[in-house]
Length: 461
Image (cartoon, rainbow, N blue to C red; front, side, top):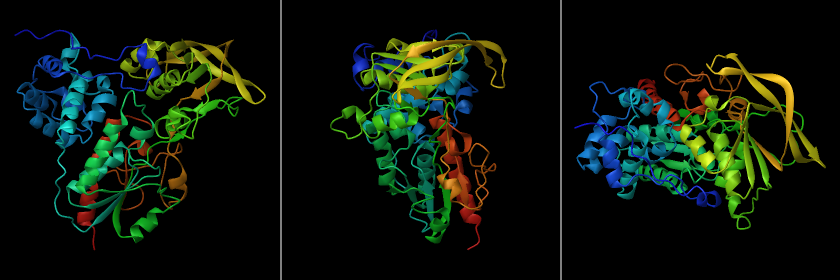
């Protein structure tokens, strides 16, 4: 039977209607659509998709089960390696991971592995199939700092081995960047809360409003009987532009802006006490997924004109192609080869942004052509500006932990086993690598659970 050439397109909410609501944009596959797409898989002898998955989900096997209408088994296959299938199916950059390695992509389009994972993950969530059975407690305690993807994967891995696991979260809700950083129209929060609840049912304890480095120190965690500690606190400190006017009223950092909207529900003002005033004309600086999220959120908050300012060309945008496509559908304007050099204000309030017009030079270390200033400028009228040019780890933990070695940019230094410079303290995710993907963070958290287990087993008592 000939393989269907093009992938099955996922239905989406109408591009005009969705600009005024926070409902999920991508609507997922129906059963028939999922089967049609699964039939495109040719079941390779050497499935490169598995090797390209940071947690090595057995992709051909779960697709095989899906085709056999064995949905329970398909879910169990994914969940064995990935405890967040509904989340990863929505937000992971499959095009540069599993789908990017799919052999069908050479001459056609790769199998929509992410969409199939989402379909199976949602089925498992609806049927409550997550395996929450664990061995008896070993009466050995481990602490996990941060409840984002790395922390959740680490907690799950250690709990499945029978450890008494406590997750400490600085904020008042659990999920880390999944909760505060990704808008509902990409990742509904009930999905995040469901995954956290699965771990609670498994016996993982969660403690909120605990800023490790202030509320407690790592030394105090050891004094409390925790035999090992995993740091998965992410990268929540924004990077600034370093230009005049950055301290004016109306200048936001993307993580602050998204946290107010997603976690503190500012979009529900006056029901929420955390309003966000953005005005009619909003500039978003940056070209990554967070910039797309901020721009699309600003549009939903009522901004009439939202535009992306990015110093390179469209081919160099680091955001997922799907997110760029959705942003364009929602009338987000892309003003490329523009680099902000000054923010102008009146009475301390943002009024304009001055951008230098850029040209592309020789490729830099990333392989992208380096943006070079032309000396010419263009000025845009704005009511607010959202800066989204990267994030790094918050220094609170580092500054209050003696002996914890970090890179000059703030990331924690670890060895091949994910152990830090402090014996028994491990780390993974964005706090080590800098801002990356959900699945990469999960991969390091999962691997660290294995090495933490070995460390505790070999530790002299």
